[in-house]
Amino acid sequence: MNTSTAKTSNLRGLKLAALALGTSFILAGCAGKPPTEQYAVTQSAVNSAVSAGGTEYAAVEMKAAQDKFKQAELAMHDKHYDQARVLAEQAEWDARVAERKAQAAKAQKAVQDARAGVQDLREEGMRNTQQQ
Image (cartoon, rainbow, N blue to C red):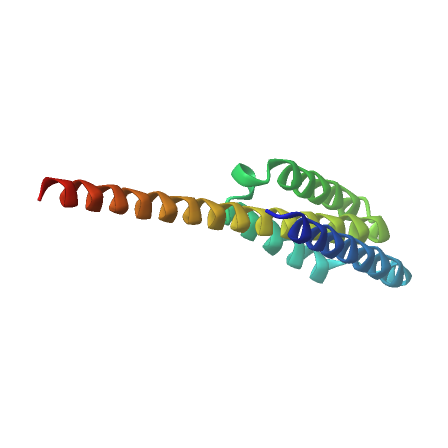
């Protein structure tokens, strides 16, 4: 990954974090009812991240998402809905980062495998040329 791509990726991550934080403050005013919709969205995001290979390719982000999701569950149970909402949102974003990281790692591996395949074909072609 070149530095330009890394900087763009870091900027995108910061923007997403700022958006999540802003959303948290806006939604904090709705603390009177359980954040069941956010809870469902977060659960879906965590499941998608696991399916994408987040536990293998983005273990730190995946653990953060799962831990925050468990904390959100506890806060919901204790009727601390504002805290549950914030934790669920944070868990959702951590899960989305884990999913994207896993997808990027898989894509990188596919590129490496394709390059290795091309190299093998070149070497085989060279051997065939030398044998003739």
